[in-house]
Image (cartoon, rainbow, N blue to C red; front, top):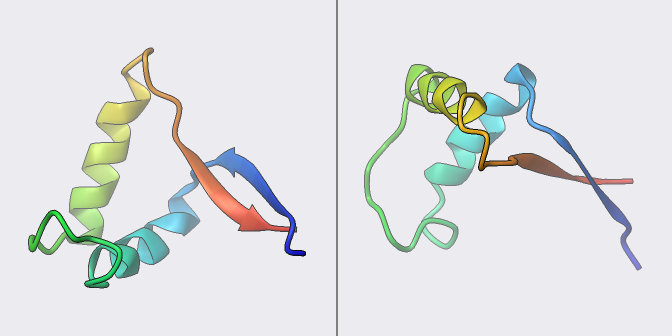
Length: 60
């Protein structure tokens, strides 16, 4: 069994997030490509929203 844990998203995660957005099976609802700057800008906005909690899913 694989164990996972959650941690806050960090800048070092942005390239992996970008790669995930380019994977057809992951992103079935959008065909838009996102740059690293797009992801950085979005995450900066997300940090200002007190109703959001964003986490990275990581293997133990």
